[in-house]
Length: 187
Image 1 (cartoon, rainbow, N blue to C red):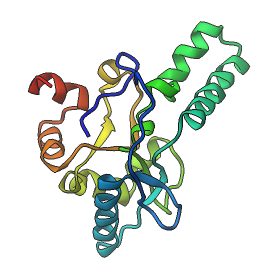
Image 2: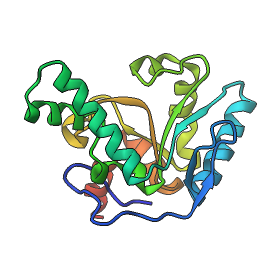
Image 3: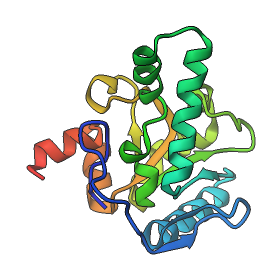
């Protein structure tokens, strides 16, 4: 659960997590424990009148690489150099070996009232609920505002990561990103 995946610590082999469906409406899968916790979290949110939608969970290497290449192409189309296009793309959509969606622990969560993966999600009741309660289910906001220099990824208010309840509570209480937690805990 605490395996760190980023541009500095890429996957050295393709993970093979035991998967389970986490969201029946979208069919998205997460690692089995994360899926169970997501289902509990989504049910608790629903009981509070907040509907969560898991729009992306586990992704295989081909899916992750295609998303990265599409993002690079977007910047090429804006006449960025190959080097600049790759750098900009990686800050939003990491290459397959640096993308934690391959672990089965990453969850892109949106809501019906704001189905766009952009910073406007931070203005929704779903985001408010998640920032208040996600840690109780083992999830953290993976790329918090102001942590780009540490994570290498821009602020993504929709991107959560399953790390287990104990770690999630510590990370949330200290306003850390996962990299800071790993460093401070000596992991």
